[in-house]
Amino acid sequence: MASEAFEEIVETFEFLEDWEDRYRHVIDMGKAMDPLEEGFRVPSTKVEGCASQVWLVPEVDGDGPSAVLRFRGDSDAMIVRGLIAILIALYSGQTARAAQGIDAQAELGRLGLQDHLSAQRSNGLRAMIERVRMIAAEAASH
Image 1 (tube, helix red, strand yellow):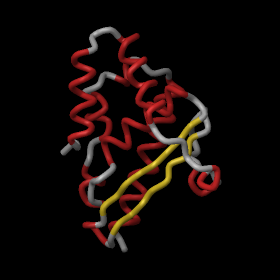
Image 2 (cartoon, one colour):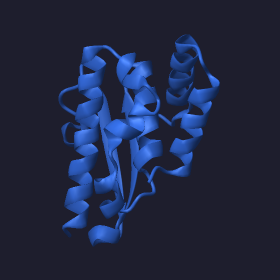
Image 3 (tube, one colour):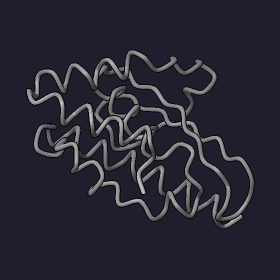
């Protein structure tokens, strides 16, 4: 089940019919995120497989499947910062078990992003989703 924050993004995308406006909205979401402190821009938080520099920092509250996940992230590319903001909306606040059950491709498909991202951006987005899923699986197993 998608979060309320993600549902708001879906509603906004339905309202914005023009892809130029949707791209602008994604970029604005990225601009609205707090920048990640330099101390978190380290190899252990860097997401490999992205053309841009991408960092995802998990915050896990609790243990096991009921641990609550929150994410912060950053990128050197504005559109990618926006994609991180969308993933944060999708996954932050979810339990580790719930996060593992999210079909990110289907949820993101509701935004129609896959039809409007370059192959490189799509690969990077998949790498970010894979990182989130690994973090959720690790948190659930503790």
